[in-house]
Amino acid sequence: MWRMFKMLPRRIKFLFFTGIFLILLNVAISLILPGFISQYVVLAVSSSDTEMVSLKVFNKFIVASGTRNMMLTELTIISVILILLAFLTSFLSIVITTWGGERSSEFFRNKIFNKIQHLSLHDINKVTPESLITRISNDVAIFWELLISATNALIRAPLLIIGGIIFTIMTDPKLSLTIFLYLPILVVVLIIMIKINNPLLVKNQITIDKITKEVEENILGARLIKTFNLKEKQLRKFTEQNNKWLKLQTKINNVFAIGHPIFFVLINLVAVAIYALTAHTLFNSTTPDVQELANINVFLEYIFTISLGIILFSAFLFVFFRAKVSCARINEVLDFKNQDLKVEDGLSIEHTVDNITGLSVQFKNFNYKYFKDSEEYALYDINIDLMPGQTLGVIGPTGSGKSSLANLLINNYKYDTKENGHILVDNKEVNKINTSDLHKNIGIVYQDALLYSGTIKSNLLFAKQDATEDEINKALHNSCSIDFVQTFEDRTNHIVEQRAKNLSGGQKQRLSIARTLINDPKVLILDDSTSALDNITTKKLLTNIKQNYNCTTIIISQKISSIKHADQIIVLEKGRITGHGTHEELVEKNEWYRNTFTNQLEQ
Image (cartoon, rainbow, N blue to C red; front, side):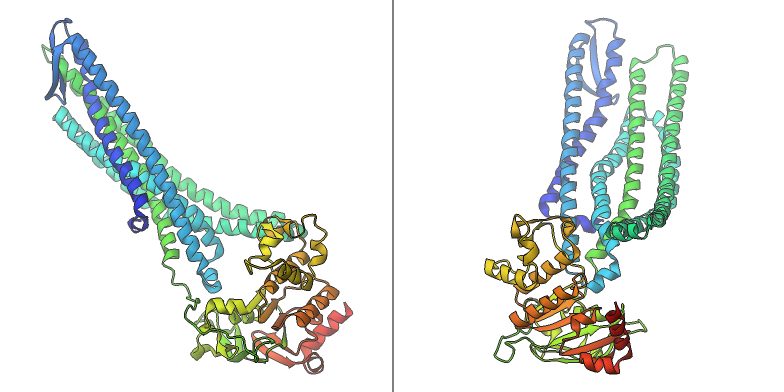
């Protein structure tokens, strides 16, 4: 936690230190004020208006002397000034520390988000998306709570406790012995509370991760859930996790809830003991001391001040142990050793006469596992040799490694040439090519077409910020998007809602293809990105790309009609190439391909 505070910029730290200074002033005023207010008792029992009276603080220090009326005026002015100062310092400290907390939350959310941007697909799957969402939202919010609590409760509580003890001793050394009877009991109660709650808080954060996962899955899969009438099943799953969280949270709150009544019982017992001792002393005294009566009130004020400090400290501990878990989770992300896939000073791809029609793509004896200790290969013994301008079709059952092949080609997964083999683009190792150069030359369109809220044009310009109207129109024509775009009143300025819910699946896929075509890639990968299109539109789109763009094309598809005209087709099964050739050759030689083709033909 201290480490996270040290990460904060100086301007944010300055806010907290200013807040701490104001809290110190506020506590000092709060500790001095009871001493002055107690003097009203002395003035109240004074025999006449002309009698000389001394105002004493802590039964020792004379701050002023004079007639009763004069001292009453002075005491009232001093008390009002101290009360106003206490209000002002308290108000300013809360405003400044809260502002510092908000700035800290902003700082760490930006820092975590920046880290997420540098995580590879492998890294994200390892940490899990739902956990990342919880850390950037819930865990940062708990850290904010800690900062506010630390600058208020943690600074204020020890000062109130220590200051209260010192001033009770100064006020009445004998009565102050009662403090040391109940303080050890309070400390024992606090330790027991901490021991019980610490493991519960860790489990609580893990449960929140699971709840986030359930919510995310239900939102993203809303259509599927409604289609198959899975609402009751999903509700049961969510309710199960929510009930686990409720039970844990109830246990945590109950432990801390028990502490407060114990504190107040002990405080009241001490108050009763003090009144009893004082009453006994006064009964046995022939001349009751007025100052002693005033001291009792001051003493009780300080007892409540000490108790307030202990209650504040217990509240801080509740936040502290929650934040301890959250800070560890935040640091886990910030310290995560992500796969460094960015190549800054790598090889560049030169456009020459040899690669004017596209870039060559080769996989040589390539093997790949997602995890080193995994027994199964995601891809095994992959050999592909694709000449510039050629089209490769990739087909296979679900989970056969088709998308892994595409992601490795754009260096989304880290591989080692000694262990895994070689992936070459334009006869250059992919993991040694400059990252920006690689992404300029290789364009990929995924099946899940992601469009951001904005306009059609703003989404297309993600690929090329300075694209001209001619380039945009060319991409729209060749992706078969122009027909439906022209039906919109605003054309390319048509509003795209969040998650593009105002567009159909086919429209989203075609716009995603148009966005990639704007960049004029030399290698184009279509990762099942025509799945929502009919066969006629798919054929027209692929013909447009073949005729109007100089690129090597890799088409990953479940539909043989999308790849049957490719120069080469590979069949992937369980990460292995089980068939390689043209459409005609595979229909003749490969059983899986032939059966799939026959089934699709019948449909």
